[in-house]
Length: 230
Length: 378
Image (tube, rainbow over all chains, first blue to last red):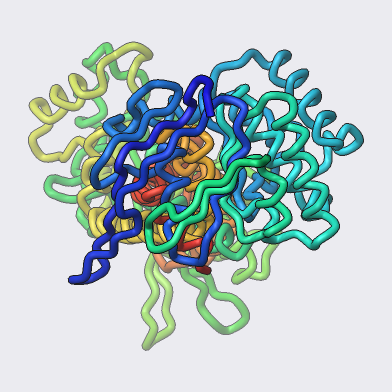
């Protein structure tokens, strides 16, 4: 693959202390993700997929190796620097949607923009556009409790896109959805990628994995396969 | 809802204790100020009507006091007891010999003041005991021997009016007549004496300066200004204040712990949500701000509910405590003062901020990746 590297990991290791034992979650991972890529990280439970995603998302730090996002070293960032970096560069989607229950769909999507200091009017307009993009134009003022699981996940995706991130990360985004709703989300991810969003997903969902243009297979903290769509 | 109710109970207790700490003192000050007599003279070493002692030579004391241009009015008061036969039994009451033109002991409710030498005014408790009504003539005596059932110093007086004694205790029968009338009924050695002088000073004059002058000019009396009287009351009420302070502090601490516990539990339950907020770029400062605001919101809601609850309980407790024998009816133990209420509210908001700090620190320090992993496992 050629192109600008959005994500670049070099010989990354991540160890956890578990009592007296040391768990080696990642045992030296080196990958590059280029702009416009759609990568699915797959593998059995405990193989280090989520740990890898957390490192790419700058919510965790490696024990060794280097992590660069958009050409910037992020592994040595302070908490404040990492927070600002995530706010402006990375969008997150989680298995559980984690929308704020007292806010409407529009307000939930506006939240990261408010944190980034986007003016109120622009926030509302952009949030409405994003919700329209994910198919929720009629649900702007609904609260999470008034939305289905699939709708909540689409609000979470719109929220992840709020600050126009270079990179969208998703951890089991279809994990809590039925097959039909999951398929809608898979389709939405594909559309996002077609429109130029770089996506990295961690999943057990075969349909989601096969929808990606590239599949990275992991086992025991190592990359054991890296296949591109042909 | 139950949690806010718990905070409200602690808040009500705090408000009541703040009201108790200063209420009686303020109520006493208002009582003393109500008739505009700033200085009281009692026999040396006593408080007004604390003992049977009296000040000799009313005329000479009055003459001395009149030499001070800052003194506007002088009201000598003679205290005694009266006894009235009512249908084969004796009814007794305290009585005051006063000058109706300058008296500061009672308010006329009905009828006439003691404008005539044979007039007597009484409060409702005594009128009930006497089974009398305004206009009735009574056989009033200043002495009564319970063994012989004999009366001395007897005189026919007309019940001219119904009054309310400002310093009167609950259900204490009391009466008043002109001082010269009372003097005509007591033994000769008790005449020209006063149990108390009430002194009104000129507007703008310094009460403490006048009090000092009286103390120097009249060494046989104790001159008490409202300020010194309040200081003495403060001393006597220190137990109440200490009790109020301790219970108030305990209430505040209980409220603080309650809010801290509530917010901490809430933070623990929302660990995943907070971790996600942090992951999407919400700053630590913003998380701290939200959690502290949560503590303040719970405290404020509890404080507002506690304000209403505190006022209701204070009124109820005041009714019970004010019925304590020997206390002036006008004294309130729990006096609502906006300043005290604001103080209590301020303390509660401060405790709400303090209560939010620990859970806010916990929330902002949550390791994001670790919290998300735990949530995923859960």
